[in-house]
Amino acid sequence: MTFSFAIIAFITLIGAVGALAFRQIVHSVLCLAITFTGVAMLYLQLGAQFLGFAQFLVYIGAVTILILFAVLLTKNTGPTISGQVYSASWVSGVGVGVSVFVCLAWAILRTPQLDRLAAEETNSTVKAIGLSLMSDYVIPLEVIALLLTAAMVGAIVIAMNETSTQTTMQGANHEKGLK
Amino acid sequence: MATLSHYLLLSALLFSLGLTAVLIRRNAILVLVGIELMLNAANLNFIAFWRHSPNPGDLSGYMFVLFSIAVAAAEAAVGLALIIAVYRHFRTTDIQKISKLKG
Image (cartoon, rainbow over the protein chains, first blue to last red):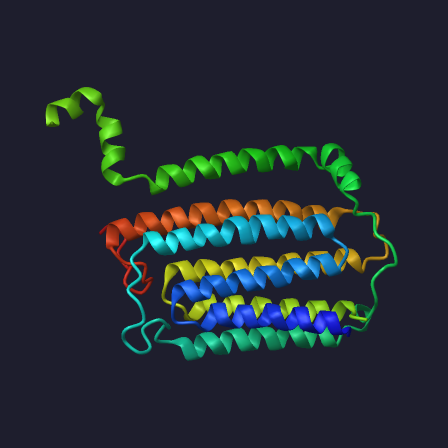
């Protein structure tokens, strides 16, 4: 185990524990950004440069900011009463989490084939990825483009004001009559 | 040198932490945060297996993660829009209080 892997793993896990445990939602979301940074660094360490920078842009640049906006748009009641931020049955939740980890770790540690080092060279240049996206994976690429468009339209429709949706449905004439 | 099992153990730990966040947090936004953590753990597994595969020229695992990131971004956008819509209706994001189907 290299020193750099230990440092990156430590950063990632500290961020995840913070996102799990902080009482203020904003602190949790900022810790989530630390975790995403750690995962991006792991991608870079594994030789997936393009994916590492995509992780930086998409997760830290977009998803974290999106979650922060959602925190701002919903009223943050704050952890005034002790224990209110966690579920009443948090003990069993932690128990489920620990037992899932124990099962996974047991399966990983008893598999001897997993104890191997990385290949010397990989073929993950941006050129190879682009050629692959445009040849073998062109249909998934188009489907993902359609999915992102549909998700954007769907997010706008869902988050639209209930009143403005109604007025759009009722039409402009009726809106004038109401005024 | 870090072997494949180190990455898998880290990813298992990250997944368990995300699962715990989903199970114990009461705020719907933090449940979504836990789901993002679990998705990241799965992506890390894909990349670790791709890097340690005997055939590194094959980009299947890489492409899977690329598409998975796009799907996760769409999921986050729609999920947060749903949370905001629910918040407008119930005036809370506490998932223990959102228990009516028609409120």
